[in-house]
Amino acid sequence: MLKGVRTQSPAELLAQVRAHGRVPRHIAIIMDGNGRWARERFMPRTFGHRSGMTSVRDVIEGSIEAGIEYLSLFAFSQENWDRPADEVGALMSLLEEYVEREADELHSAGVCVRVLGDLTRLTAAAGEAVGRVTGRTARNDRLILNLFISYGSRDEIVRAARALATDVVEGRLAVDDIDADRLGARLYTAGCPDPDLLVRTSGEQRISNFLLWQLAYSELYLSPVLWPDFTRSDLYDAILSFQARERRFGRVSV
Ligand code: IPE
Ligand code: IPE
Ligand code: MG
Image (tube, rainbow, N blue to C red; front, side, top):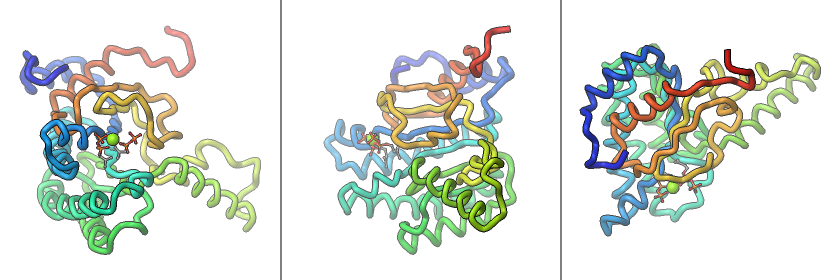
């Protein structure tokens, strides 16, 4: 729905979501469109990234209200390292600022923060900030928040394949015992149910190397809204759309 023409309040939308009963356990979001949002305002791209943090906060709160168990946010891809150095630097600083500033609130809201990706590439300060918030919130269970940073799905699968190959070579695993569950257990997302719903903002219609394995049977919701304009109401629209669908997993309707 376009901004400004919404007729229902967030509370009304939430009531509709709740009235339906079944909410997705796990929602994954490709948070896209920060650069275009800034350009529309004749501002630098980093202004869009900063503004997008407000949407992150609202969507986390909205997810808790709706009873979502897992929220996965794609914040920075491995390919994003190839952006101009000043943009990458600004994104690392924003990440550090975000986790430092939000840590108290996330912790008191019962959010367990996990950060998934190749964290060896983060700046030392960002890496330390991430370590602090994940350690501090590790025992929370109201909402599991997966932040994907320096993440690429093909690389994740390659790492899993290497780990399985090492197990075989070292005699811990037989080749015939390799199956989908064992591979899934070697991904960053081990132990997490697959996303029920994938949201991508900004009108793009692609996966961009996000959770290629885990999205096998996720429902897709492509929103035209640019990420800094995305609110919990947009999230509730996505959930309402999900609730109206029939998931068949390759079988036939009953
Ligand atoms: C998403 O917004 C944030 C990141 C990928 C870090 P973009 O920066 O990709 O914004 P657009 O797609 O250029 O508008
Ligand atoms: C995907 O967005 C990555 C994140 C949202 C973090 P991109 O803007 O990097 O993806 P492409 O380049 O449009 O595919
Ligand atoms: Mg983009």
